[in-house]
Length: 343
Image (cartoon, rainbow, N blue to C red; front, top):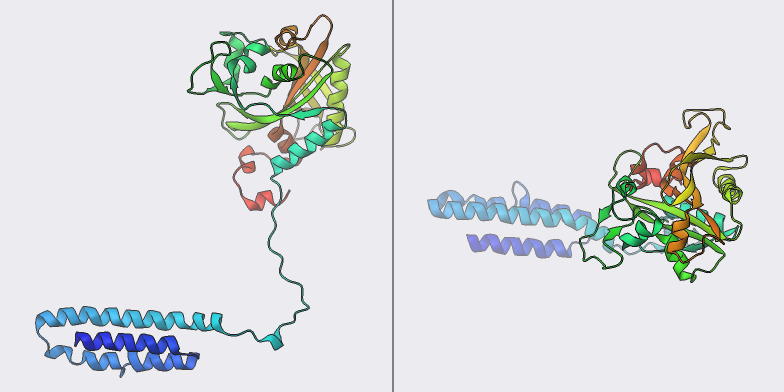
């Protein structure tokens, strides 16, 4: 009986494979699995078997039924795929369906726009290591070993062998490591107009901070450079990024690598400086800036008695959040297309 069941299964599968129409498929379903079908006719013989044979044959009956049923279920979709094209019903003049197209990520768009804004006034885009030596990230920018200002950056250090002169290896907590590297690249010759855009890393994680973020660093060094030049560059950027009428404001602050140092604010483009939920009394806090500290110029081999400079560092994600009124930085990196496709 077991052999008869196997023969029925093979016979049914062969006929199903050759079926050409839904009607033929239905006829085969009735012929093999119907109430009076071939399988059920064979099942009527089970009561005459021994107990051992009943168990084996019962299990095999279920397997044969399931195999035939699965083949019958799959056959209609196979017929649909194999059906020849009805060329008389196809309008070949209709346009094809275009595949979905993506676009640059919002952060990448911002980086390209920021690069173009500063290129207009002579800045040169550069890029320096995001895994760098302690010397470039701290010591060269006036934060010697053990200085308390280092604690503010909550730095990720890399488990690697230290350099005898340049110290430990780390993930750059800011783009200021590019300042002295740029002076070295130019052999300490002026003028310097650097725009360094890179990822930065700090041990911070909340609605407005992530452990990895993007920052751009501007550095200008030449004879006669002063605060009015810094203010003019920031005003230019504010107008280009936020819109006409936006101006910058410098508030006294302290950064170890600049003297004097400033916090940079821009007038709020949403309320025109009158004050709204998006700003603090009409101003948006953006980043830090200041006149390059003489010790930083010395680290880059530039004579601070002859040359002066200024530097500024601004977070790209923060600029995006302020421009588009995004209240959670994590939205930029969750890869939710419903959010990203808005930009």
